[in-house]
Length: 147
Image 1 (cartoon, rainbow, N blue to C red):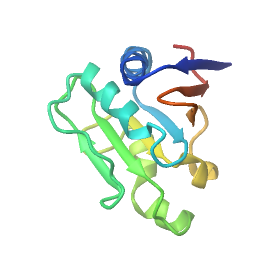
Image 2: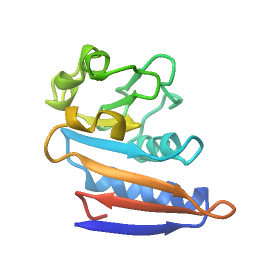
Image 3: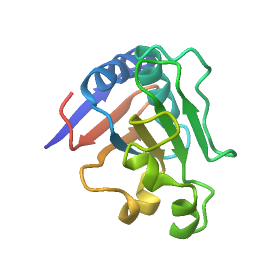
Image 4: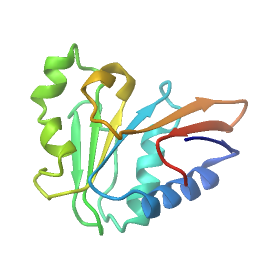
């Protein structure tokens, strides 16, 4: 099941994030794919806002993983951009998060640049690819979930 959604601006991206937040069931793994600045982190921010996360949701580019536990569902936010290989990815403990064994229990695990280590992602991973269009537009392709 593949769904393609045209997004005109950040307001529509936030609305898509809210839909995702209300559709995904933990434990769930979501691979986010798209060029720098495409809106991967913005989408996670929108999901987190809908789930009531009170912390600032930021890109985990340098810390590699951020955990948000103040909402209705824990969110684990990984960034695979700076990792060299699959071993480094696995060493982050991703398999425990995927299985719902993260420090805060079963949650939603977002992996930015998830295509870099697709072979390490579990069966049933939802894939969200964000393509930059003209202006503020985006084309979002979702595989594995209908929102």
